[in-house]
Length: 478
Image 1 (tube, helix red, strand yellow):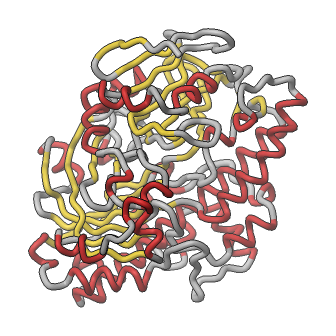
Image 2 (cartoon, rainbow, N blue to C red; image 1 turned 45 degrees about the vertical axis):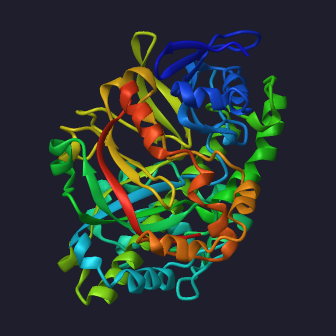
């Protein structure tokens, strides 16, 4: 595959064969050397063959192989002639992340780290099939969650009304239709609200370790040594089932509408078609479940802090900074070939990064740009950035979403064999809990790229700007 260097952090895959647009990859020289032997670059080229794609098939520096689209993939499709593809959203619909900060300082956690991680582990169920015995919804209640998103949690005293102003789309995607969600998906989601599940999902308590942009940090409410909490999870079994249900629908739709696929995993339907409309409505419903899930988890995180510090959440000032989607397809207006057009933007393992002044950003943040939340691995650091005009011009207002795996789960478990990981982390000042040893082994820091390199790349490329770094003190892994 031909790859041309544009500059230190951007690379072009020229359009060839059946590619309708070129590929655009954000990566440093070192990252590209690793990627050249990875199947994800071929996936970038495959996405470029889909009907109605505009500008380029893009990939962020945390790119790695995924289902259909690469994880880290971004693509926008014209509403006339374009398509929507479940492979461009992924199985974990609206997997995303939220960050809270508090009145506490790092020194306040001295002697309380173990008690706090234990309280979080009790309060927030984790692991494969994790569920809450005290929050099993009936079908009517769950359908309300699918329509209302995070607002459902607030109305049922499982969330904070002030949070809704600081969630992408206000915590609820429009157009959600529970009738387009299968009974199997409904059943899988009934007892999973308020749980993080498995894989790389987590709840993490940390502190602000570095400030890069004091002005933006002040607007967001960050101060040095301030205690923070991160929640990373998605739509659990419900979202997985929605994706699985619609893949067969989309394979048939691709055949019916004569769409030639370079990979069956890119099955899709024309925007505006009945199949696309049904999938969009089901996807929005699953996204709303995820928004509500993170809101409920944040409620239990606040309760855990209250239990350990014997103070109310209000006294601790555990406030939501922002909550963003990582796996979603949304209708947005962008500049395409010199004019503003409505397009369907797929972000799979990518974060919206809208520029200062954008109406979609909460009013309090419009002067600095949309908050961009980038979790790293459980042993190093995470970042908060803000969106830029460069992102609007280069990447449909998108940037990276995390570190990106560099090691398979099997490889990670093999490398972790024989290590006393919980003790290893405690020696570094990080209290670690997981649903099982296998989960912790799969998530060792070495399994991921260094998120600092990923963040430095998007910062240098001008598609987001660094604000603060957060370091972990206590982690609950799925």
